[in-house]
Image 1 (cartoon, rainbow, N blue to C red):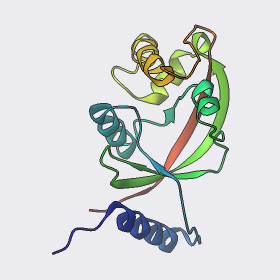
Image 2: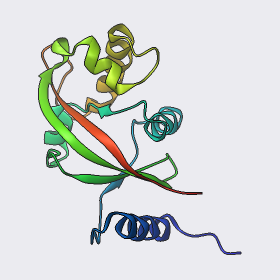
Image 3: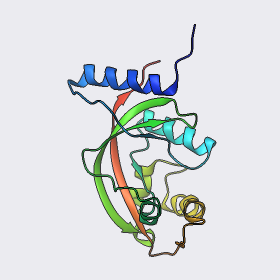
Image 4: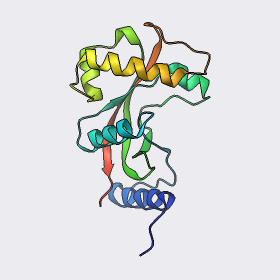
Amino acid sequence: MQQLSNEQRIAQLIARFNEQSGRAVTELPSWHFCDNEQDANDCALLVLNGVKQATTPSLYWFKANNETLPEVGDLAIFTNWQGQPLGIIETVSVTITAFNQINADYAALEGEGDKSLEYWQHVHWDYYQRELAGTGYQCHPEMPLVCEQFRLVFKESE
């Protein structure tokens, strides 16, 4: 039996989503969370289990990569590190918040680690340093973050 490519899996996921939702989506962006395999796969599982409901790249990353900001209603496919599609999320809220203004409730929405603000600050500070390396931007307590809250609208069936 021939293995499907990730592109074929994505096309099938979109077709099943359209069938279930009555939509006529033809293409969606696909990406994985985080910048390493362990965290990417862990975060994807947290989304599938309904624990992770937010993600928070820096605004600087969007500027450095000439990417458009997410908007309410956006749909996206999230994958594991290997690019296999796992589900579709819909953006429900986008705000720009300084790193030092993130609160415990928001940190809990991210769903990672023990869900505490302290954990969030520690792992995200390290992440932003890696994310911004070589961009000309520097981490600082007031750096603007793109706080995207989402909901899981479709799960890949295995």
